[in-house]
Image (cartoon, rainbow over all chains, first blue to last red; front, side, top):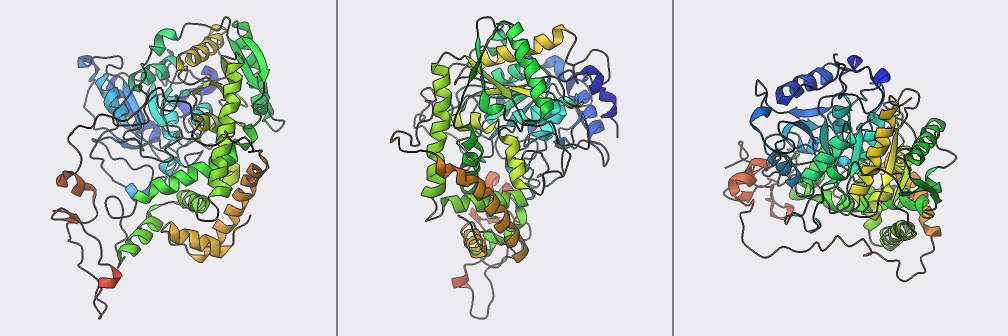
Amino acid sequence: MAGVEDLEVQERGPGRVGLGTDGGAEPEPGLSGALTRARSVDEGPEGLNCFLSLAPDPGGHTGETRKGPLAGLPVAVKDNICTTELPTTCGSRFLDGYQSPFEATAVRKLREAGGLVVGKTNLDEFGMGSSTENSAFGPTRNPWDPSRVPGGSSGGSAAAVAAGVVTCALGSDTGGSVRQPAAFCGVVGVKPTYGRVSRYGLVAFASSLDQIGTFGATVRDATQLLEVVAGHDPRDATSARRPVPSFVQELDQGLEGKVIGIPREYLPESLDPGVAASFRAARARLEEAGATIRDVSLPHTRYAVPTYYVLAPAEASSNLARFDGVRYGTRAPEARSTGEVYAASRSRGFGPEVIRRIILGTFALSAGYHDEYYGRAQRVRSLISRDFHRVWADGVDLLFTPTAPTPAFPLGERARDPLAMYLSDIFTVTANLAGLPAVSVPMDPVRGLPCGGQFLAPPWEEGRMLAAAAALERSYASDGGRE
Amino acid sequence: MSVARDDVRRVAQLARIDLDEKTTARLVEELNGILSHVESLSEVQLDDPESVDGEQEDAGGSGFRDPELRPDLTDPGVVAQGAPGWRDGFFLVPRLPALIDEDGAAGPTLPEDGGP
């Protein structure tokens, strides 16, 4: 396989993969170059498997004639975001070859801004997973170490950016599915405020938690794409009627005078010592850059994962009821009655993790258990949200935490233990439960693997949050990169 | 709270999913592991009457759109594209069990081309 070994990630440091000026992984401009690179990194049995489908090759650079902030820029799109020119499979056998009759608003906007969709990226089936191993089309591998997972569920988008195929990509984040793979792959991943980006055309997993997010090789790349896709959309009743400021223009603000809270619940004793050391070093950099660091507490944090794993499956069990073998997707041919069509098609079309979550969610919503599980989890969700509001009210501008408790783990390590897999979301699910914006940005690597730090901000304060991420990025760049 | 095989079978029926015995047994084990983790929610004090759902941050005046007619996706040509079975503006499914003939013949078979 070509592509992985020439990245020289160890020498170049996280976040620089694909953007360096020393050759190697620097993306060629235009669609053709990106397509060539995509084929090269995905090729062979040990290939990264970032893409499930690729755009037709135009046979030359097409960027010259396009206008807009993304003019001629190749962009990768997660395969649960609908496109009319390429299939939308959601990483599921159920939708193998499915062609959407409509286009997601985020995709339309990125095209209108001059961007070019390179291809659709691999994901855990319907976004359910933290490693991209739950794809029906095989796992994606981590460009830094192909024996390890890229994180998930947007692992294909994260790996495509890290491998230098594209400088930015779209993903979706229901419990950390943009930020955790960004951390594992050494790139930047933004989950905006709930309602900031239209969900029209994003295949629903858990509607109160889902949000389209962006990846970038740098904070600026991810920010530019966010600025393009953000904004009110009449086709999504939960998209906010708020103006979208120029986040890019705010990137140089710096950290002088900013109060950054470090929640103690995000630094448990069980935290990987390498991640803890990387985080301490990043904290020191934030202070050097002029921020005031304050230790804070978010007391209901420990209930976030159990709350999430009641609410998200409950919503998923309802959303995925639409996959019935009647209107689109796979139908079991042997079914002799309508009831059999439903059950046989769903059992055959869905993979093990999706079935696990549908069963769990149906249980949490079933008569006799609804109040005990779903009702209680909804109320705890309010308390988790309230923890954040108290901290903001106390004068904290931003929170800073590790993105994930460990660096990328080996392929297969957690595949048989769903609870262990779920716990890799421990620092990311809170932003979804509270509807807050959050971003993962590379810190010092741990044992040669990327490691991410996460900023969280009050609702609609993406500008402040991304400026802090950019300041941290500048700090690493100013002394020659990360350790 | 723990679940047994019958609970998983009942829930699978509600969710319209067929499970074989091996998968049922695995799911019983996995669900019990997950539910024991979820048990921790029962220790949270919920006596504050205000701490109920519906407390999400206001989305900044998001709301309903004006009622106006616009093109939709019910164009039969578009819908038929993705449908496993489609004819004359209808989705095709096997006949309901109540309508199956006494000799056991199922309803109409799907057209070979699956579309109009």
